[in-house]
Length: 209
Image 1 (cartoon, rainbow, N blue to C red):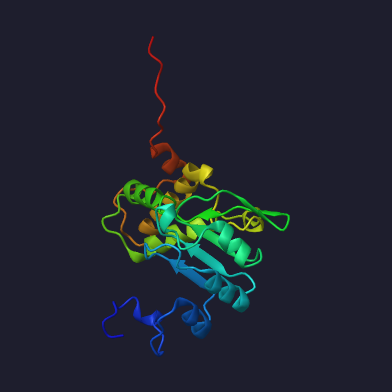
Image 2 (cartoon, rainbow, N blue to C red):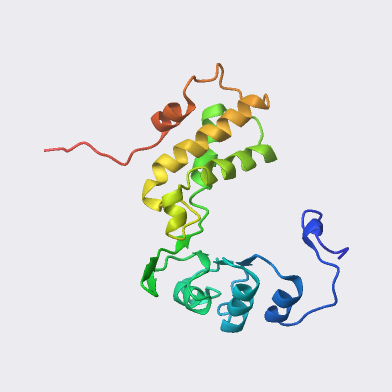
């Protein structure tokens, strides 16, 4: 435990070493599995079934890329949990139908946060990045998940709205920079969302004849 980085220690469990993931799940009883090891097929049928036995809606996040290294597929997560899992992945998976219901796998990707975060830093002229600005970006993303998305099993807003999503994230990040006194572009624009949109690059080119 003493070898852990300081930000990991609050999440460490006082427990005898456990070699198998399924045994760790049964012992610790987590509500979420986050796969970032880069080693595929770690979320086995036994692991997902154990998560489903413990949770009404287990959150399964198979984030390793490429698809061949995903901890499990969307189909496996939905099937092994009898349609109760909330699934997100690093690689895209097609919608999957189980027991007459269509599930839309969410793609958990840093493309949601990083462009909007960077834009917020730029438009505010932030002199440094504060942890609260990262938190503001995360909260701005979460606020854009609507009830209709939850009904489809999504925990991220649809990616086709990424420019709108990024503008809203940029506005929240910039607002936090102004609030913290870290912004150098003064005065603060009245409408940060519109200002963020006006500063975004648009890949549109004039037609030359």
